[in-house]
Length: 258
Image 1: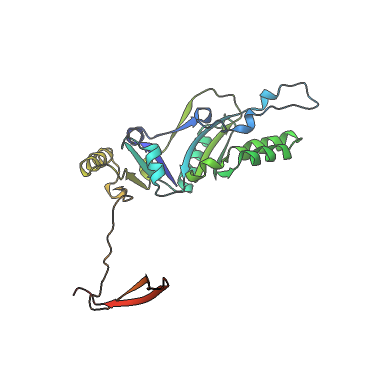
Image 2: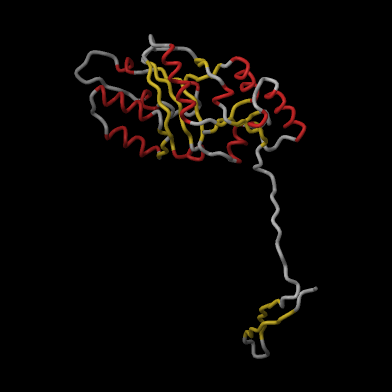
């Protein structure tokens, strides 16, 4: 899994060992956590439907290793790097946080995002109504991992911490070892060689393994060798009208310039 992060943030992680999970209310897409934004009627109850909300902290990753669009979206300054990890390492970070916060009822999920049209999303919601409370909770969980099809290019994977508490914090920080969790750090393919060395040295000076740092080769041109046999005759098809206006076709053979 891959994540594009500002270089300054990564340097801070290497120094502090803190991994930030934002409250997803800060995420820009209006359809984020859309189930909790719907109008809810509690049948056969005097309670308010607003009580069914929860607090979600999350991170977005991608399974797309190399992407021109992702570099341009997240790194328009050249000061963003791409980190790579694997599912077990990230999951272990979340489990350790849960172990240290047993007093906070929390569930953790890492899963791929499913993409659907807006009409498909609304039809799916209505097809589940009416439902009991447990079915609604499951609907909330599934909805976190659904986005509109316009975002399909992201090939997103989400890591979500869900708290039943009404937590108003904008983010939480988890303890982790970035030297173990980050299997590789890749620097923007558009930076100069001098800037690549500067960024690499910043990472190395904070203890990150130099062998796990490289510059993206997305824009590197890799030549191949094409052989042309100059002794081989070349056939050129010709078409021309004769004196009666009929189209005549024939081939002319010429030797190569060699």
